Image (cartoon, rainbow, N blue to C red):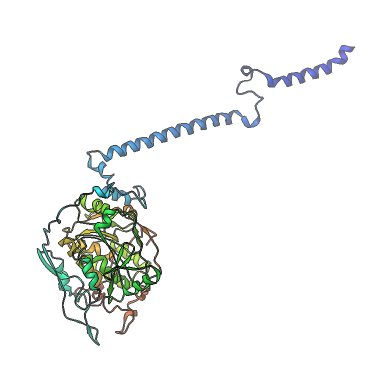
Length: 501
């Protein structure tokens, strides 16, 4: 009886014990597919997790191998004798430029290291001057008939160049006489004490401030050798001189020369133009005329602080490659028509006058930039210009300035045009933009530009002889009847490749 009474309880305990013992089964009895696994560790999920981890590991290894192969290929191709492969490493070459236009080249750096020499004291300065081969004798037109505005006649700084004279100036000959600013009584007069001082300057770092837009910024990293070798000349107008006197300490030497730190101030009396931007082109482009004894010059805009020794700059951009003229490539644009479009968008000058300027160039055969051209770009960054004052370089600067004098003061629109008109005879080094930004520290202007001309939207705003919008001493080419019919000229379309101006 006792056995009968205990049997149901024993049976239940036995089943419970067997149930409780299941988790303690050996691995070989349960295996991976044991029913004791929790629901979230189902067989399908376990297999998927293990497979995914293996996939990630394999993909990572393959990706690292691919990167290594690409790097090795890049190193090999740069040293390869196969021209196409080695051209991919040449950032000034057409292959790299084409890849850049297609978006296949690496994104350009804003700043990059400049391969300058290590020690300014060890640089060997070339003896003598680069021989003048194409143009051997260059002289300037300095006196001509006065210009009349209807009420009275007056002299103009840039002269009254005719269309025929302009055309002849592009035909290179051993001996040439051209317009190049500084016509008698045209303005931009230097003090006698400064004229005497600059005659001793063979190596020049030049800058300029006009209409009080900037304050002088002292160069840094200048070696003792360069301080002795170079003249640091800051050209200013009378407005800027007053601004500097009220904000910066000016030191006067025994000869009444004015100094701000390392900069020798060179005041220009009687500004030659109504528009401050155009006045600033005088020392920038016509450096060889302001400082006629200089053999080498480096121009930097007034808003910039030079941070590289000028002797290292000359060695890197001129002497190392046996160049005589160097200027940086524009960061965003290669075609002057793209640059003109950006100038209109940012209201850098009167829109209808920029269009008229570009129509004249297009009618004269200036095509938009393409890979067919021998230049890596038609548009420079003009805030730094490095040059030896050879006869051909001086002529180029005269022709470039004449375009600025005749048309708009946006000099970046005229540089590539003058190169085009000289048919490849003018040689220069256009270096990478990222090196350009490594030469200086950029400071903001003290205030915005104030020219009314920049806001003009229609030619009708220039109507009337008393119009305050029309410049009275510059831009005559935009108001002189052009020999060709520009009404039939349609400017090439512009694709805006950059949001930046």
